Length: 383
Image 1 (cartoon, rainbow, N blue to C red):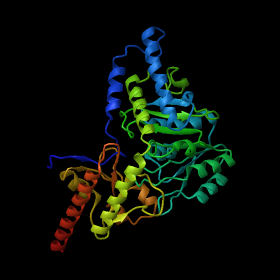
Image 2: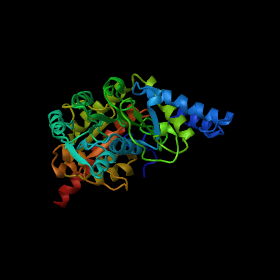
Image 3: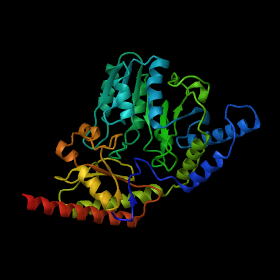
Image 4: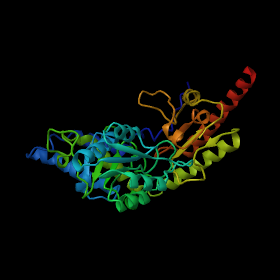
């Protein structure tokens, strides 16, 4: 095993930032339950409320609209199930490329569910959304992610929100992958609910938020206490919330970061296409994508092989559809895009972030080329 490790799986989770560690250690020294009225409790409450300001700023929201959760999955579930129970939603409209926490929740919700197809470039089809809205029964909730976690394809959220508003539907945006990578304020201004997660931007795992704006009134999924506007029972995780705030503050200052990441992504993709026969970069040149994300495949080489070979070479990447158990499964995103199954089976995702350097990308590009060259030679001998 190569002793030098290079982490290129930021879309799965980003390394914790130094400022986040410091904020969490400081918060852990705070004694008190945020719901207590004594001085210690008020100090803990102060940390939570200060954090609300930072997290709200990620999407230009009002701090009082921030509901802290255990992560993006819980926030998505609260948005969908909460809208059904609290606002009488009878139809859910979700895109076919959503995160499983949206897709599976919608399919098991017990109400009518319609799915918006994706085009070959990875963006949802707005005409199809309009058709779904026209067919919807009763009150409706539309859920569309801001950017896809596998391909990086940025979705037409503003246009989707306008369509939802024209039909009197609620709008939910899963912005987990887009936070810190896109200007989310204007993009999500028409959304009633927005999902965020700390660990994608260098914060701790296990903390997220649902932005719930005026007009959205979901019912709680977790009950038993009055925390978080009575929408999420349970004592707040003060240290994780403080870490979330520190990460949010960091990404809001990094105004040049998208350009830096895009330069590395474009260099990587140019090298891959030039040096590896048949290599395909999904969505390249046809749709706006996150600056940090490349989803690629090499015909005839499986994703499982590439992920393991790269790991042995010292590089951490994911398959296009690494599931919760860590196994490599078929990507529902690439399937929705109409990618040929044999090619989709070879898809891997390279995602960069705050600590990635151009030298690491250059070394990765060479390692991938070497692996593919060796595999092509081996396959040729075997044939």
